[in-house]
Length: 515
Ligand code: FAD
Ligand code: NAD
Ligand code: NAD
Image 1 (tube, rainbow, N blue to C red):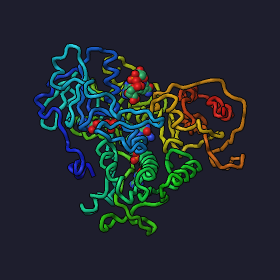
Image 2 (image 1 turned 45 degrees about the horizontal axis):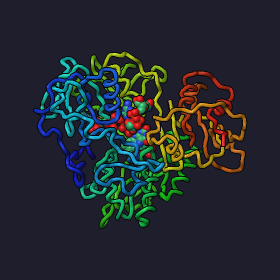
Image 3 (image 1 turned 90 degrees about the vertical axis):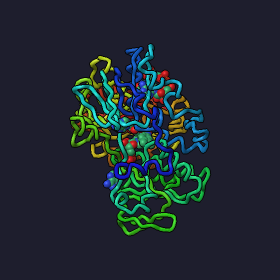
Image 4 (image 1 turned 135 degrees about the vertical axis):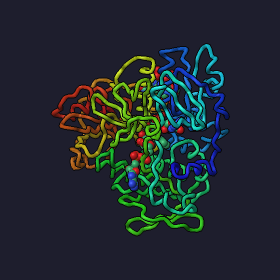
């Protein structure tokens, strides 16, 4: 919908702010140009600055905001009814401590106008501005009004845009008013207003965003609007089905239902009709769901429009700008984060849509822009929380179509995202240091050979565990289910490239049997 009707993005939301208001104030030449104001750009800036202390870095971002983190937008912000107070966009972490969505406050950045003259260098963010073309030979980037910015090194960190389903984008405009996608602060601000008074919200999509947001909105309903019904509609049989093995996906759906979400599985929206102050979603089995708001969370498309105008290559299967293991697309031009399809020396060509990947690839691109020449070797991780009590961390190739072997153990209150955040005081879990200690021999495991049939303790409960994803008998991915601060161990298991006879033994490395 954004691409078809870009103006809709700002209807009823904060107006698009351009800072500076005129492109004449944007430098005509910069040493480092970062395109995009997200996490990958921010990580690149930090890396550049740490290697080149007086670097002058210009970020050009289409968003009206300074760089901020997206993960809390489908999690913590909804558990704290005061999150939007004073427009500061702070939120409470699972352990109750307060944090800002923004990586840095306004006064951390220097103004775009003064970047050129600044003897100490610094980073400036041109907000509300879009780069529409790059000439990689002349090393010039063009703004939408034709203003030219010459660069020495440039990073593409353009992220991704949520997909919309045809059933909504082809519907009449009166219906489209009820339908949104969800990606950034304006989407949150709009939905946060609605949540207080509305009676029904339907989320379409069973992946990360749909599942996290459904749980978060259901908890929020309990806090301040008990009449609100939250529906989650998706075509798979269980939540996060593309990631989790079938039995765990089904178990998770049960948990999501217990959070108060009306989960409608194996279903697609076939038609949509206007009602008095809501829309009626007609599903493939003929059932209807009436909703005052529909949030479509059916994945994203990487933002690669620049490729066409700039002679850049896009990978046809995974989408994303094609870059090598050093994250270089063309000479002096790099790409990182959601928008890049990079060569992973270990697992082949990949594109990854997660926060820690944006941090790690952004940092690597930044280092290479200063001349480090390092390949992508450090695997990124990702995490997901379905509220403060259930969460997982994962690394490598995590795809439920691969064979899996899982080892589960009994969980206690300590095995939750909330407890993990209480210990580290950081909601961004990729920062956590692994805590590797000796493995336990107290074997109370429930070994599950991927089918879910192996449970022996009479309690069909996947409290905490380790799930190994195998390709040709090698471990290529690991999910740590309600197991936290063990990412270094997981990273090492992937690195070892061994064939294991007994993954139960490997699971012990993660101390899951400790009470
Ligand atoms: P983005 O954050 O999308 O930033 C791209 C930036 O580029 C934007 O500012 C955009 O406006 C700008 N831009 C695009 N084109 C242009 C142009 N031509 N000119 C100028 N600017 C441009 N991941 C996790 O691992 N864990 C989580 O718990 C998690 N939760 C999430 C929750 C939500 C609600 C969302 C939306 C995502 C979540 N993610 C999570 C995914 C994670 O946030 C993304 O992978 C990450 O933001 C990618 O960073 P990026 O810098 O590549 O792209
Ligand atoms: P901090 O950890 O309190 O960071 C403040 C905020 O900035 C956090 O939300 C964090 O996620 C974010 N942040 C920090 N470094 C970032 C980066 N390079 N790119 C994007 N976001 C970043 O305090 P701090 O002193 O800034 O960080 C402590 C150390 O941890 C630093 O050396 C930093 O480079 C490192 N770090 C590592 C990772 C990782 O390995 N995934 C991620 C972030 C930070
Ligand atoms: P996703 O890729 O995780 O899930 C896509 C879901 O869309 C699928 O599960 C499916 O139910 C549905 N779908 C796809 N095509 C469809 C179609 N044609 N018709 C009907 N349904 C369809 O993406 P998402 O959940 O929309 O999340 C958006 C982005 O944000 C992704 O990049 C995701 O990785 C990221 N995100 C990550 C986290 C996290 O890492 N914890 C949290 C939130 C969002």
